[in-house]
Image (tube, rainbow, N blue to C red; front, top):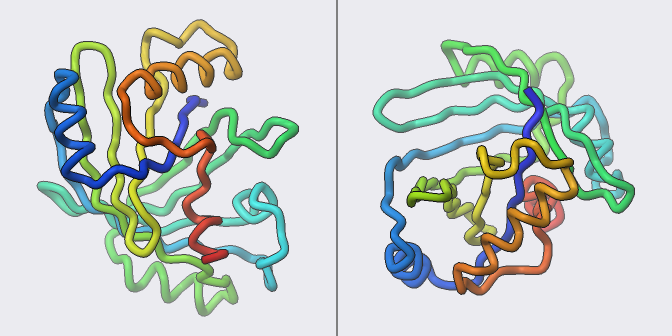
Length: 188
């Protein structure tokens, strides 16, 4: 199922973000750690557009919360003319061994171009559910996946409504609501 989501960098401290969100009625409902290993069949990708990299990539994800879940994912992203992600569909399969999956892809000649570790905190109030992501060596981001309030809108309309909801929270947000953390890490 295709979903629209926005991801924006937040320039407040974690403590300040937590305080602001709690003042807005949010509570933390889940905490988890994501350890993503991105692989592509492409070489020399520093000068390749993000949409071409991600269309030719898979990732091995270790999700640690109450249990450990390891998956192989493909993110089928759709982009607008400006290169912003409009929606995506995730295709995934559970696997049992992260190291062996990484080894298989490496031996098959795939390029492990980025490893992305994130501490994630899911905040929820009566209206919204947000995922606050502290990304190692990059910064803090909020990911907001579409909810029932926007489900009948066109993707571009969904994005505008979702952006406005985030802006009302009073956080110090970046300008890009289609942050590509993997691409940012690649070019860091």
